[in-house]
Length: 169
Image 1 (tube, rainbow, N blue to C red):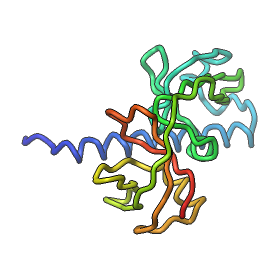
Image 2: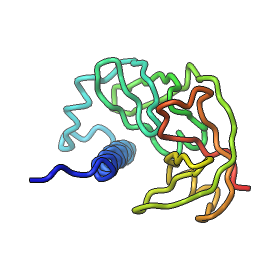
Image 3: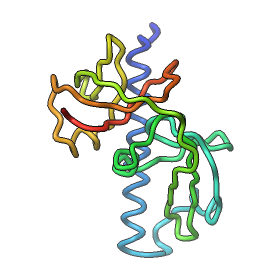
């Protein structure tokens, strides 16, 4: 079997992360609707219920100190304008709900770029370098491919793959 191109591997990882985020959001919604129904098994969450963790936002998820990836709701990340590298606190409630709080924002800079799309994912092109943009941000600001958008990046944008959408211009 030939090696998958790096772009395809990155895209697969992004799709898996998005699926995990959607699954976690669906579990939270189901729990809010039916409560603690014993017929619904959230056993993988029960092992960490009631814990407080600190981790680093990777542009889409929180990377915990235990090496696990915790899904950050895209609407929270978008509205809070979380930037890759921000420190988050995650409280996992007894009912399995995830409560995030930004506790350590990284130094930021604001730049302008052009909204582009590849393989169903959105990016902002800033001086020839492309950064991922959360779909929730694009939807909220009603962004269209080709629009000029203002985004927030960490001041040190070395190895940064994600940008936070500030506004559509």
